[in-house]
Image (tube, rainbow, N blue to C red; front, side, top):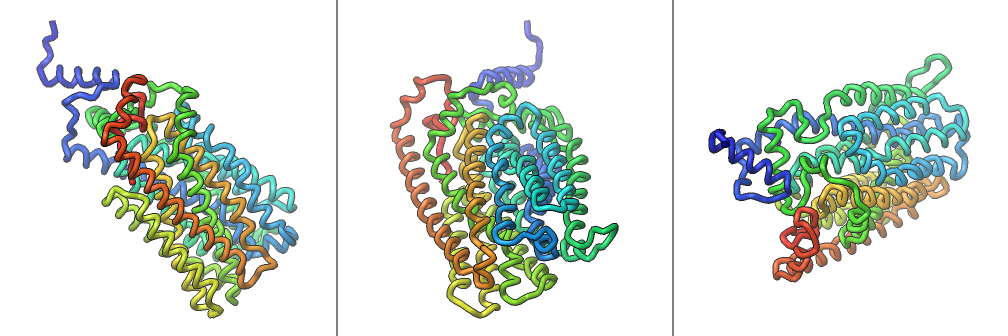
Length: 491
Protein backbone atom coordinates (compact mmCIF):
# COMPACT_ATOMS: atom_id res chain seq x y z
CA UNK A 1 0.00 0.00 0.00
CA UNK A 2 1.38 3.43 -1.02
CA UNK A 3 1.48 5.67 2.06
CA UNK A 4 3.18 8.69 0.44
CA UNK A 5 1.45 12.07 0.75
CA UNK A 6 -0.82 12.93 -2.16
CA UNK A 7 1.48 15.65 -3.56
CA UNK A 8 4.44 13.24 -3.51
CA UNK A 9 2.32 10.66 -5.30
CA UNK A 10 1.40 13.23 -7.92
CA UNK A 11 5.05 14.09 -8.47
CA UNK A 12 5.96 10.43 -8.77
CA UNK A 13 3.12 9.79 -11.21
CA UNK A 14 4.14 12.74 -13.32
CA UNK A 15 7.77 11.62 -13.39
CA UNK A 16 6.61 8.18 -14.54
CA UNK A 17 4.43 9.72 -17.24
CA UNK A 18 7.29 11.91 -18.42
CA UNK A 19 9.65 8.96 -18.71
CA UNK A 20 7.06 7.26 -20.87
CA UNK A 21 6.79 10.38 -23.01
CA UNK A 22 3.21 11.12 -21.98
CA UNK A 23 1.97 14.68 -21.60
CA UNK A 24 -0.06 15.06 -18.41
CA UNK A 25 -2.50 17.64 -17.09
CA UNK A 26 -0.03 18.51 -14.31
CA UNK A 27 2.36 20.29 -16.66
CA UNK A 28 2.22 23.92 -15.55
CA UNK A 29 5.46 25.40 -14.24
CA UNK A 30 5.38 28.07 -11.57
CA UNK A 31 6.43 31.31 -13.39
CA UNK A 32 8.60 32.36 -10.45
CA UNK A 33 10.37 29.00 -10.45
CA UNK A 34 10.74 29.16 -14.24
CA UNK A 35 12.38 32.59 -14.07
CA UNK A 36 14.69 31.46 -11.28
CA UNK A 37 15.82 28.43 -13.30
CA UNK A 38 16.40 30.57 -16.41
CA UNK A 39 18.40 33.11 -14.41
CA UNK A 40 20.54 30.35 -12.91
CA UNK A 41 21.20 28.84 -16.34
CA UNK A 42 22.08 32.26 -17.76
CA UNK A 43 24.51 33.01 -14.94
CA UNK A 44 26.33 29.67 -15.10
CA UNK A 45 26.31 28.90 -18.85
CA UNK A 46 26.20 32.07 -20.96
CA UNK A 47 29.44 33.71 -19.71
CA UNK A 48 31.44 30.59 -20.59
CA UNK A 49 29.76 30.14 -23.98
CA UNK A 50 30.29 33.81 -24.78
CA UNK A 51 33.99 33.83 -24.02
CA UNK A 52 34.65 30.51 -25.79
CA UNK A 53 33.02 31.80 -28.97
CA UNK A 54 34.85 35.12 -28.63
CA UNK A 55 38.14 33.22 -28.49
CA UNK A 56 37.09 30.94 -31.37
CA UNK A 57 36.48 33.87 -33.66
CA UNK A 58 39.66 35.65 -32.57
CA UNK A 59 41.77 32.55 -33.17
CA UNK A 60 40.37 31.95 -36.67
CA UNK A 61 40.42 35.57 -37.88
CA UNK A 62 43.58 36.92 -36.21
CA UNK A 63 45.44 35.91 -39.37
CA UNK A 64 43.96 39.08 -40.89
CA UNK A 65 45.59 41.18 -38.16
CA UNK A 66 48.86 39.25 -38.50
CA UNK A 67 48.86 39.90 -42.25
CA UNK A 68 48.96 43.66 -41.68
CA UNK A 69 51.82 43.25 -39.19
CA UNK A 70 54.25 41.33 -41.38
CA UNK A 71 52.96 37.76 -41.79
CA UNK A 72 52.48 38.10 -45.56
CA UNK A 73 55.95 39.60 -46.02
CA UNK A 74 57.88 37.10 -43.88
CA UNK A 75 56.16 34.00 -45.30
CA UNK A 76 56.19 35.38 -48.86
CA UNK A 77 52.42 35.14 -49.32
CA UNK A 78 52.35 36.37 -52.89
CA UNK A 79 49.48 36.03 -55.34
CA UNK A 80 46.57 33.98 -53.94
CA UNK A 81 48.60 32.27 -51.21
CA UNK A 82 46.98 34.27 -48.42
CA UNK A 83 43.49 33.51 -49.72
CA UNK A 84 44.35 29.81 -49.94
CA UNK A 85 45.56 29.89 -46.33
CA UNK A 86 42.18 31.31 -45.36
CA UNK A 87 40.28 28.72 -47.38
CA UNK A 88 41.93 25.53 -46.10
CA UNK A 89 40.64 26.27 -42.60
CA UNK A 90 37.13 25.39 -43.78
CA UNK A 91 37.91 22.05 -45.45
CA UNK A 92 37.88 19.98 -42.27
CA UNK A 93 35.73 22.55 -40.48
CA UNK A 94 32.67 21.71 -42.60
CA UNK A 95 33.28 17.95 -42.66
CA UNK A 96 33.29 17.53 -38.88
CA UNK A 97 30.06 19.39 -38.04
CA UNK A 98 27.54 16.53 -38.13
CA UNK A 99 29.66 13.83 -36.40
CA UNK A 100 30.73 16.44 -33.83
CA UNK A 101 27.08 17.07 -32.93
CA UNK A 102 26.52 13.34 -32.52
CA UNK A 103 29.60 13.10 -30.29
CA UNK A 104 28.44 15.98 -28.08
CA UNK A 105 25.76 13.81 -26.45
CA UNK A 106 28.09 10.91 -25.68
CA UNK A 107 31.01 12.97 -24.35
CA UNK A 108 28.78 15.48 -22.55
CA UNK A 109 28.21 18.98 -23.86
CA UNK A 110 30.17 20.79 -21.17
CA UNK A 111 33.27 18.65 -21.56
CA UNK A 112 33.05 18.46 -25.36
CA UNK A 113 32.98 22.21 -25.97
CA UNK A 114 35.85 22.82 -23.53
CA UNK A 115 37.98 20.00 -24.98
CA UNK A 116 37.79 21.20 -28.56
CA UNK A 117 38.56 24.75 -27.38
CA UNK A 118 41.73 23.49 -25.67
CA UNK A 119 42.68 21.69 -28.88
CA UNK A 120 42.34 24.73 -31.14
CA UNK A 121 44.09 26.90 -28.56
CA UNK A 122 47.14 24.64 -28.82
CA UNK A 123 47.07 24.79 -32.63
CA UNK A 124 46.54 28.56 -32.59
CA UNK A 125 49.56 29.01 -30.34
CA UNK A 126 51.70 26.93 -32.68
CA UNK A 127 50.82 29.20 -35.60
CA UNK A 128 53.10 31.83 -34.13
CA UNK A 129 56.08 29.54 -34.66
CA UNK A 130 55.52 28.76 -38.36
CA UNK A 131 58.38 29.68 -40.68
CA UNK A 132 57.07 28.45 -44.00
CA UNK A 133 53.94 28.65 -46.12
CA UNK A 134 53.49 24.88 -45.78
CA UNK A 135 53.54 25.16 -42.01
CA UNK A 136 50.90 27.86 -42.13
CA UNK A 137 48.65 25.69 -44.31
CA UNK A 138 49.03 22.71 -41.96
CA UNK A 139 48.14 24.81 -38.92
CA UNK A 140 45.11 26.32 -40.62
CA UNK A 141 43.86 22.83 -41.55
CA UNK A 142 44.24 21.60 -37.96
CA UNK A 143 42.66 24.76 -36.58
CA UNK A 144 39.59 24.15 -38.75
CA UNK A 145 39.36 20.54 -37.61
CA UNK A 146 39.46 21.56 -33.95
CA UNK A 147 36.99 24.44 -34.25
CA UNK A 148 34.59 22.48 -36.45
CA UNK A 149 32.37 21.19 -33.66
CA UNK A 150 32.02 24.48 -31.78
CA UNK A 151 29.46 26.51 -33.72
CA UNK A 152 26.77 23.88 -34.22
CA UNK A 153 27.69 22.35 -30.87
CA UNK A 154 26.90 25.53 -28.95
CA UNK A 155 23.53 25.91 -30.68
CA UNK A 156 22.61 22.30 -29.94
CA UNK A 157 23.93 22.64 -26.38
CA UNK A 158 21.85 25.74 -25.63
CA UNK A 159 18.72 24.15 -27.11
CA UNK A 160 19.05 21.43 -24.44
CA UNK A 161 18.58 24.05 -21.68
CA UNK A 162 16.26 26.76 -23.05
CA UNK A 163 12.73 26.88 -24.43
CA UNK A 164 12.26 27.70 -28.09
CA UNK A 165 11.50 31.40 -27.67
CA UNK A 166 14.12 31.88 -24.99
CA UNK A 167 16.75 30.51 -27.34
CA UNK A 168 17.22 33.40 -29.77
CA UNK A 169 18.37 35.92 -27.19
CA UNK A 170 20.81 33.38 -25.72
CA UNK A 171 22.16 32.65 -29.18
CA UNK A 172 22.48 36.38 -29.70
CA UNK A 173 24.43 36.76 -26.47
CA UNK A 174 26.90 34.08 -27.52
CA UNK A 175 27.08 35.11 -31.18
CA UNK A 176 27.62 38.82 -30.51
CA UNK A 177 31.07 37.70 -29.39
CA UNK A 178 31.87 37.30 -33.11
CA UNK A 179 31.73 41.00 -34.04
CA UNK A 180 33.14 41.91 -30.62
CA UNK A 181 36.12 39.71 -31.46
CA UNK A 182 36.82 42.00 -34.40
CA UNK A 183 36.86 45.00 -32.11
CA UNK A 184 38.74 43.34 -29.26
CA UNK A 185 41.06 41.45 -31.60
CA UNK A 186 42.01 44.64 -33.42
CA UNK A 187 42.92 46.39 -30.18
CA UNK A 188 44.81 43.37 -28.83
CA UNK A 189 46.69 42.83 -32.08
CA UNK A 190 47.77 46.47 -32.12
CA UNK A 191 49.55 46.00 -28.79
CA UNK A 192 50.89 42.48 -29.37
CA UNK A 193 52.43 43.45 -32.70
CA UNK A 194 54.83 45.72 -30.81
CA UNK A 195 56.45 42.80 -28.93
CA UNK A 196 59.93 41.76 -30.06
CA UNK A 197 61.46 38.90 -28.09
CA UNK A 198 63.78 35.95 -28.81
CA UNK A 199 63.71 36.45 -32.56
CA UNK A 200 59.92 36.58 -32.78
CA UNK A 201 58.98 40.08 -33.83
CA UNK A 202 55.43 41.41 -34.06
CA UNK A 203 52.88 39.09 -35.66
CA UNK A 204 53.93 35.76 -33.97
CA UNK A 205 52.93 37.19 -30.60
CA UNK A 206 49.37 37.69 -31.82
CA UNK A 207 49.13 33.90 -32.15
CA UNK A 208 51.21 33.05 -29.06
CA UNK A 209 49.25 35.16 -26.60
CA UNK A 210 45.75 34.70 -28.02
CA UNK A 211 46.20 30.92 -28.31
CA UNK A 212 47.50 30.67 -24.75
CA UNK A 213 44.52 32.63 -23.42
CA UNK A 214 42.18 30.14 -25.11
CA UNK A 215 43.92 27.16 -23.50
CA UNK A 216 43.67 28.63 -20.00
CA UNK A 217 40.03 29.71 -20.28
CA UNK A 218 38.87 26.43 -21.84
CA UNK A 219 40.67 24.39 -19.18
CA UNK A 220 38.70 26.19 -16.48
CA UNK A 221 35.41 25.91 -18.42
CA UNK A 222 35.85 22.12 -18.53
CA UNK A 223 35.05 21.93 -14.81
CA UNK A 224 32.11 24.36 -14.78
CA UNK A 225 29.94 23.76 -17.87
CA UNK A 226 27.07 21.29 -17.18
CA UNK A 227 25.90 18.60 -19.63
CA UNK A 228 22.09 18.67 -19.25
CA UNK A 229 19.56 20.39 -16.94
CA UNK A 230 19.34 17.20 -14.87
CA UNK A 231 23.09 17.42 -14.19
CA UNK A 232 23.35 21.09 -13.23
CA UNK A 233 25.09 21.10 -9.86
CA UNK A 234 24.03 24.70 -9.27
CA UNK A 235 20.31 23.72 -9.35
CA UNK A 236 18.43 21.98 -6.55
CA UNK A 237 16.94 18.53 -7.36
CA UNK A 238 13.52 20.14 -7.77
CA UNK A 239 14.92 22.79 -10.11
CA UNK A 240 16.78 20.16 -12.13
CA UNK A 241 13.56 18.23 -12.68
CA UNK A 242 11.57 21.33 -13.66
CA UNK A 243 14.38 22.60 -15.92
CA UNK A 244 14.11 19.42 -17.98
CA UNK A 245 10.32 19.11 -17.71
CA UNK A 246 9.56 22.61 -19.00
CA UNK A 247 11.16 21.77 -22.34
CA UNK A 248 8.60 19.02 -22.93
CA UNK A 249 5.79 21.47 -22.25
CA UNK A 250 7.37 23.92 -24.70
CA UNK A 251 7.75 21.31 -27.46
CA UNK A 252 4.76 18.99 -27.51
CA UNK A 253 5.75 15.70 -29.08
CA UNK A 254 9.48 16.46 -28.94
CA UNK A 255 12.20 14.95 -26.76
CA UNK A 256 13.57 17.21 -24.06
CA UNK A 257 16.96 17.34 -22.38
CA UNK A 258 15.85 14.73 -19.86
CA UNK A 259 15.03 12.18 -22.57
CA UNK A 260 18.10 13.05 -24.63
CA UNK A 261 19.97 10.56 -22.44
CA UNK A 262 17.44 7.84 -23.28
CA UNK A 263 17.05 8.60 -26.99
CA UNK A 264 19.01 6.37 -29.37
CA UNK A 265 20.53 7.21 -32.72
CA UNK A 266 18.58 6.01 -35.77
CA UNK A 267 19.10 6.55 -39.48
CA UNK A 268 15.41 7.47 -39.71
CA UNK A 269 16.19 10.57 -37.63
CA UNK A 270 18.96 11.44 -40.07
CA UNK A 271 16.55 11.07 -43.00
CA UNK A 272 13.93 13.24 -41.31
CA UNK A 273 16.59 15.89 -40.66
CA UNK A 274 18.00 15.88 -44.20
CA UNK A 275 14.75 15.70 -46.18
CA UNK A 276 13.02 18.59 -44.51
CA UNK A 277 12.13 21.81 -46.33
CA UNK A 278 13.29 24.00 -43.46
CA UNK A 279 16.64 22.21 -43.20
CA UNK A 280 17.33 22.51 -46.92
CA UNK A 281 16.13 26.11 -47.32
CA UNK A 282 17.81 27.43 -44.16
CA UNK A 283 21.07 25.61 -44.88
CA UNK A 284 21.29 27.24 -48.31
CA UNK A 285 20.32 30.58 -46.79
CA UNK A 286 23.00 30.20 -44.12
CA UNK A 287 25.55 29.50 -46.88
CA UNK A 288 24.63 32.81 -48.52
CA UNK A 289 24.56 34.72 -45.22
CA UNK A 290 28.09 33.64 -44.31
CA UNK A 291 29.57 34.99 -47.55
CA UNK A 292 29.33 38.65 -46.46
CA UNK A 293 29.94 37.84 -42.78
CA UNK A 294 33.16 35.91 -43.36
CA UNK A 295 34.46 38.27 -46.01
CA UNK A 296 33.80 41.18 -43.65
CA UNK A 297 35.54 39.48 -40.72
CA UNK A 298 38.56 38.37 -42.73
CA UNK A 299 39.06 41.40 -44.95
CA UNK A 300 37.85 44.42 -42.98
CA UNK A 301 41.44 45.41 -42.06
CA UNK A 302 42.39 45.20 -45.75
CA UNK A 303 39.29 47.12 -46.88
CA UNK A 304 39.99 49.94 -44.42
CA UNK A 305 43.67 49.90 -45.34
CA UNK A 306 42.56 50.37 -48.96
CA UNK A 307 40.88 53.62 -47.95
CA UNK A 308 44.34 55.05 -47.33
CA UNK A 309 44.92 54.29 -43.65
CA UNK A 310 48.17 52.80 -42.37
CA UNK A 311 48.47 49.49 -40.48
CA UNK A 312 47.98 50.66 -36.88
CA UNK A 313 45.30 53.19 -37.83
CA UNK A 314 43.50 50.59 -39.96
CA UNK A 315 43.55 48.10 -37.08
CA UNK A 316 41.96 50.65 -34.75
CA UNK A 317 39.30 51.64 -37.30
CA UNK A 318 38.02 48.05 -37.37
CA UNK A 319 36.80 48.51 -33.79
CA UNK A 320 33.76 50.86 -34.17
CA UNK A 321 31.84 48.92 -36.90
CA UNK A 322 32.46 45.65 -35.09
CA UNK A 323 31.24 47.12 -31.82
CA UNK A 324 28.07 48.34 -33.55
CA UNK A 325 27.53 44.79 -34.84
CA UNK A 326 27.87 43.54 -31.27
CA UNK A 327 25.06 45.85 -30.18
CA UNK A 328 22.76 45.05 -33.11
CA UNK A 329 23.13 41.29 -32.61
CA UNK A 330 21.97 41.71 -29.01
CA UNK A 331 19.16 44.07 -29.96
CA UNK A 332 17.83 42.01 -32.87
CA UNK A 333 17.98 38.82 -30.79
CA UNK A 334 15.94 40.39 -28.01
CA UNK A 335 13.37 41.72 -30.48
CA UNK A 336 13.16 38.37 -32.28
CA UNK A 337 12.36 36.51 -29.06
CA UNK A 338 9.83 39.18 -28.07
CA UNK A 339 7.88 38.92 -31.33
CA UNK A 340 8.62 35.15 -31.60
CA UNK A 341 9.67 35.53 -35.24
CA UNK A 342 12.98 35.14 -37.07
CA UNK A 343 12.33 35.73 -40.78
CA UNK A 344 11.17 39.37 -40.63
CA UNK A 345 14.21 40.36 -38.55
CA UNK A 346 16.51 38.71 -41.13
CA UNK A 347 14.81 40.73 -43.88
CA UNK A 348 15.51 43.98 -42.00
CA UNK A 349 19.15 43.03 -41.34
CA UNK A 350 19.80 42.03 -44.96
CA UNK A 351 18.30 45.32 -46.16
CA UNK A 352 20.67 47.29 -43.93
CA UNK A 353 23.66 45.31 -45.23
CA UNK A 354 22.57 46.01 -48.80
CA UNK A 355 22.69 49.76 -48.08
CA UNK A 356 26.25 49.34 -46.80
CA UNK A 357 27.48 47.60 -49.94
CA UNK A 358 25.72 50.14 -52.17
CA UNK A 359 27.64 52.86 -50.31
CA UNK A 360 30.88 50.99 -50.99
CA UNK A 361 30.13 50.68 -54.70
CA UNK A 362 28.51 54.05 -55.41
CA UNK A 363 30.95 56.38 -53.64
CA UNK A 364 34.64 57.20 -53.97
CA UNK A 365 34.78 59.19 -50.74
CA UNK A 366 36.69 57.31 -47.95
CA UNK A 367 34.35 58.63 -45.26
CA UNK A 368 31.22 57.32 -47.02
CA UNK A 369 32.89 54.00 -47.75
CA UNK A 370 33.90 53.66 -44.12
CA UNK A 371 30.34 54.55 -43.11
CA UNK A 372 29.15 51.69 -45.32
CA UNK A 373 31.07 49.21 -43.18
CA UNK A 374 28.82 50.17 -40.25
CA UNK A 375 25.68 49.28 -42.24
CA UNK A 376 27.20 45.97 -43.34
CA UNK A 377 28.24 45.08 -39.79
CA UNK A 378 24.90 46.09 -38.25
CA UNK A 379 22.85 44.26 -40.89
CA UNK A 380 24.79 41.12 -41.73
CA UNK A 381 25.96 39.84 -38.34
CA UNK A 382 22.49 39.44 -36.76
CA UNK A 383 21.37 37.26 -39.70
CA UNK A 384 23.66 34.39 -38.71
CA UNK A 385 22.30 33.61 -35.21
CA UNK A 386 18.78 34.32 -36.46
CA UNK A 387 18.91 31.68 -39.21
CA UNK A 388 20.47 29.17 -36.81
CA UNK A 389 17.84 29.75 -34.12
CA UNK A 390 15.15 29.57 -36.80
CA UNK A 391 16.14 26.05 -37.81
CA UNK A 392 16.71 24.95 -34.21
CA UNK A 393 13.18 26.10 -33.35
CA UNK A 394 11.76 24.05 -36.21
CA UNK A 395 13.49 20.69 -35.62
CA UNK A 396 12.95 18.03 -32.92
CA UNK A 397 13.71 15.63 -31.23
CA UNK A 398 17.38 15.62 -30.25
CA UNK A 399 19.05 13.55 -32.99
CA UNK A 400 17.00 15.21 -35.73
CA UNK A 401 17.98 18.61 -34.36
CA UNK A 402 21.62 17.57 -33.93
CA UNK A 403 21.80 16.26 -37.50
CA UNK A 404 19.89 19.16 -39.05
CA UNK A 405 21.98 21.81 -37.28
CA UNK A 406 25.17 19.95 -38.16
CA UNK A 407 24.13 19.89 -41.82
CA UNK A 408 23.19 23.57 -41.73
CA UNK A 409 26.52 24.58 -40.23
CA UNK A 410 28.43 22.32 -42.65
CA UNK A 411 26.67 23.66 -45.74
CA UNK A 412 26.67 27.21 -44.44
CA UNK A 413 30.37 27.29 -43.76
CA UNK A 414 31.04 26.30 -47.35
CA UNK A 415 30.22 29.96 -47.93
CA UNK A 416 33.71 30.59 -46.60
CA UNK A 417 35.15 29.09 -49.80
CA UNK A 418 33.44 31.92 -51.67
CA UNK A 419 34.18 34.56 -49.04
CA UNK A 420 37.92 33.94 -48.92
CA UNK A 421 38.22 34.76 -52.63
CA UNK A 422 35.89 37.77 -52.80
CA UNK A 423 38.60 40.30 -51.97
CA UNK A 424 41.75 39.64 -53.98
CA UNK A 425 45.01 41.60 -53.78
CA UNK A 426 44.78 42.63 -57.43
CA UNK A 427 41.41 44.30 -56.77
CA UNK A 428 42.83 46.66 -54.13
CA UNK A 429 42.19 49.35 -53.08
CA UNK A 430 38.53 49.65 -54.21
CA UNK A 431 37.61 45.91 -54.17
CA UNK A 432 34.68 46.48 -56.55
CA UNK A 433 34.30 42.78 -57.35
CA UNK A 434 34.17 41.76 -53.69
CA UNK A 435 31.55 44.36 -52.82
CA UNK A 436 29.44 43.37 -55.85
CA UNK A 437 29.55 39.67 -54.95
CA UNK A 438 28.40 40.42 -51.41
CA UNK A 439 25.61 42.71 -52.59
CA UNK A 440 24.38 39.89 -54.83
CA UNK A 441 24.48 37.52 -51.85
CA UNK A 442 22.34 39.95 -49.84
CA UNK A 443 19.74 39.92 -52.62
CA UNK A 444 19.58 36.11 -52.49
CA UNK A 445 19.17 36.22 -48.70
CA UNK A 446 16.09 38.39 -49.13
CA UNK A 447 14.60 35.99 -51.69
CA UNK A 448 15.26 32.78 -49.71
CA UNK A 449 14.01 34.26 -46.45
CA UNK A 450 10.75 35.50 -47.98
CA UNK A 451 10.17 32.13 -49.70
CA UNK A 452 10.83 30.21 -46.46
CA UNK A 453 8.35 32.40 -44.58
CA UNK A 454 5.70 31.70 -47.22
CA UNK A 455 6.25 27.94 -46.87
CA UNK A 456 5.99 28.06 -43.06
CA UNK A 457 2.75 30.04 -43.23
CA UNK A 458 1.31 27.44 -45.62
CA UNK A 459 2.46 24.42 -43.56
CA UNK A 460 1.22 25.82 -40.24
CA UNK A 461 -2.17 26.48 -41.86
CA UNK A 462 -2.28 22.87 -43.09
CA UNK A 463 -1.60 21.57 -39.58
CA UNK A 464 -4.20 23.87 -38.06
CA UNK A 465 -6.83 22.56 -40.49
CA UNK A 466 -6.07 18.91 -39.60
CA UNK A 467 -4.35 17.96 -42.86
CA UNK A 468 -1.40 16.42 -40.98
CA UNK A 469 -3.41 14.46 -38.38
CA UNK A 470 -2.78 11.20 -40.26
CA UNK A 471 0.77 11.24 -38.87
CA UNK A 472 -0.58 10.32 -35.44
CA UNK A 473 -1.10 6.80 -36.82
CA UNK A 474 2.54 6.51 -37.95
CA UNK A 475 4.17 5.85 -34.58
CA UNK A 476 4.52 7.02 -30.96
CA UNK A 477 3.59 10.69 -30.66
CA UNK A 478 6.69 11.59 -28.66
CA UNK A 479 8.90 10.45 -31.55
CA UNK A 480 7.16 12.49 -34.25
CA UNK A 481 9.01 15.62 -33.19
CA UNK A 482 8.63 18.45 -35.69
CA UNK A 483 6.27 16.26 -37.75
CA UNK A 484 3.65 16.20 -34.97
CA UNK A 485 0.37 17.84 -36.12
CA UNK A 486 0.37 20.09 -33.05
CA UNK A 487 3.94 21.30 -33.60
CA UNK A 488 3.97 24.79 -35.11
CA UNK A 489 6.90 26.12 -37.07
CA UNK A 490 8.37 29.44 -35.95
CA UNK A 491 7.98 32.16 -38.54
